[in-house]
Image (tube, rainbow, N blue to C red; front, side, top):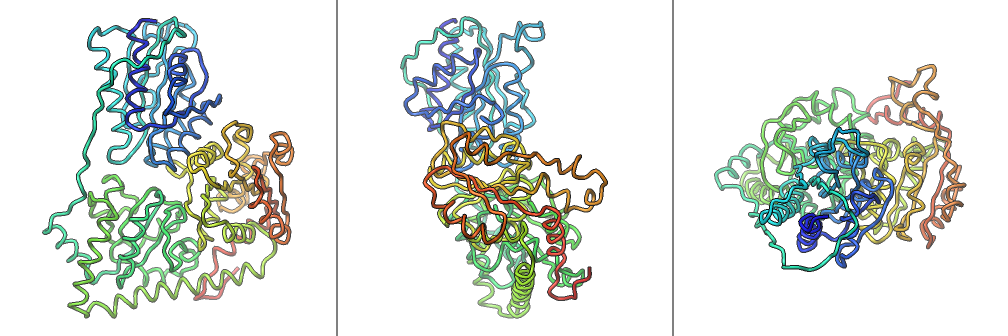
Length: 573
């Protein structure tokens, strides 16, 4: 290999190390040998080797999801890069910083029937913030500057504005193994200064005027835990006329049943929905899980505002009227003090607004009470299992929810949420939840619980054998014989061959896998068994897996009834 090509790896990793990148997930290969060898010299970058590129990418996603810092991903040439796509798409739509470094063959050999050659530059363009390509050609004295510039830009871009993935494709010619790592001269490091969030006084006055006396609903989708934002929203929610609708994975922790979204809205009559409709919706965070909430706001047209954590072109509710490019924590805090002073001077607004907030509180309490009584009078099902589990997770644990069964049931039982709650809800793929949850556990370095269905778990059970599994990582599997959602939703509920073509029972041998990988195995097939096993499962010092079995048909039927309950009307079958 030419000296300039040797230097590419050193320069890239020197800059990234200096700029605070501390983790890398690498998949073995020949073409990326220079990168792997260069990583092996790094004392400040922890490198995790994962053979399966799809799992490697999801594991890196989980690490960055918790740490909120860029994680390096590196793979060999060929289809390896394309296996990253599902996790990169999730990172892009969820705003997670990743730096993908793919090794490539010289451009001369692309499409020449040579091994592992296909088009890699720009392959991820729709789902990364920017793509870079470093060719083999020697640019003489400009080569070092070019690679240094790319390295600095990639790290800054991955964190700037809304974070996200960045792709660097680097071409290597043979030979590939003669890399000598040496310190050389210090690399040029580019830094940035982020201006403080700011709204001009006249703009602030206009916002206050528009909000004063209005019924306001704050809707929060997925977000990372943020103590400052939590305090600001708590302040804002104390104003009369403000109602919160926060999904489980919004990581907003405020009293008042703010996470009771689906189980409250699903039971409201059209008349009650109209009565409770807000004048202004302020939307923050990522994509919503609740189709019921989205449908409610779309149907009962109102004014919708989005804040700086959301792209200005996103109009989820089809009623967008204002995008404010400002950090949500600053917005809610500043508006609270302005509106609070305005209400103190003019109490004419207060009775109507208090009635609005009070009606929502009363509605939530009634709906939750009737649902609690309903569950108490029902038999063993997914509903009872999730109610118990989500009510008994230790508060300092992190929770990761797979897509499908787990994330939707968690919407119904979130009064006792743990430290932080995550899910792959950027694009809601099912295939990478095991590896992403493992990445979260590695980054958190304390107890992490993955709750998943048997179908989601079946995609990559091999993560149970990885070398990097922290002792505090545990898994709950709801075994409902495949895709339980297809037994619930109306389009597939009554299809003749539903179980074969849609539910597709994966028949996962959970106990056998636990034995094979040396995990502790627990099982519960009733609430009494769950109450006995769960405390031992949680306190177990080893990696452990808890398999919960339910009657899949009854679980689907009882959930349909639960979602139709209405505290204000007689339930009709």
